[in-house]
Amino acid sequence: MARTISCFLNNIVLKLNRIPNEALKTCGLLIILWLTDIARACFVIGYYLRLKKAIIIVVLHKKGKTNHLLLRNYHPIALKNAPNKILKRVIIKYIINTVKKHALLP
Image (cartoon, rainbow, N blue to C red):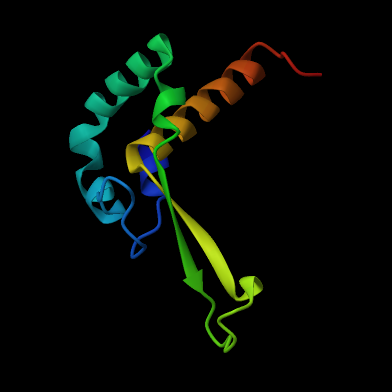
């Protein structure tokens, strides 16, 4: 989980819960045990799927494009919940490691 948090980019738009990635990276070692417990609990009770729905989409105008009436001059950005991103990556890594460990794919 610490490796997952350390891979987050700095200086980007704040997510839905307004926790900057720099804060997660700075405090990662202090909160990793709690995040692990939260991830385990979410995985056991199946709560992750409900967390996944918390997304805000912001539409930004592309630089250098002068016509504001054309849709192709805009691009959407999805602002996801930062702990949700961590949980998603941890669960994906867990599944990949389990598949490799038990040789479930040819």
